[in-house]
Image 1 (cartoon, rainbow, N blue to C red):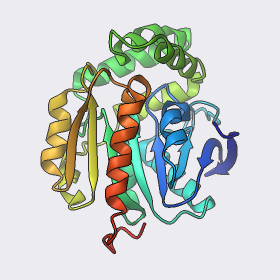
Image 2 (image 1 turned 45 degrees about the vertical axis):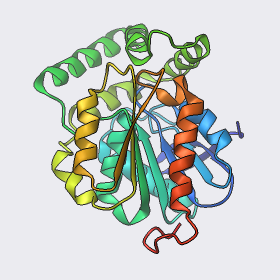
Image 3 (image 1 turned 180 degrees about the horizontal axis):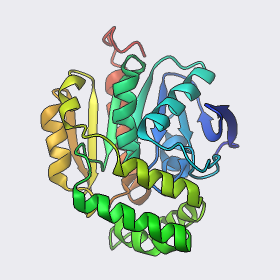
Image 4 (image 1 turned 135 degrees about the vertical axis):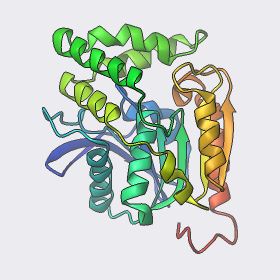
Length: 274
């Protein structure tokens, strides 16, 4: 992996990887994860500029005590692109990163050339899920992030996940600061319902992927996104749970490469401006 870089945007120091040249792909990780979720994809997708940040409060980025909302994550990413002189990007988010991607698209539509969402849903939290988030917040405040790691690791990964995937997930979770975990839980709990927004995505090239054994995201939720977005392609990644880039990296990389190659056809649409 490249040597991590650092920039201060919106008053918070973010850690990020920036590798390669060409049109940009911005990778957005999920809850209690960090930029290393995308390690295999960042290494492999030659011909593209691969940018993978740690969101505020996750990984090696700074973790302020408050100020966490989907809009804040999205604006952080827009400010990072500004600092890196990137006008437009392919936006790729997993789970909570998918929620951030929807918010980024809502707030900064002109900067998105194409969209990739993995293992996420558009609907807001139900009352039951909000209650579960509140319970997690209380547990983390009382007992630190260790109160969640074992429980969530078992839910994130398929039963047959490799030892390497389990080790890498544990490493990411261990790097999650308490303030960032609490803030992310609050941001997910309070996020808007993106279902009405989906129709406005229109003909934006969109790839939707979900792990074959994901128990966190209902497959029906991903199919509903695909049905609502006219230009969406939906696929299932075999031998993976909630974290396909980690559990079946070769398959995810191949599908991403195929999607990205389609954006760079000999006569690309002028609207893409890649």
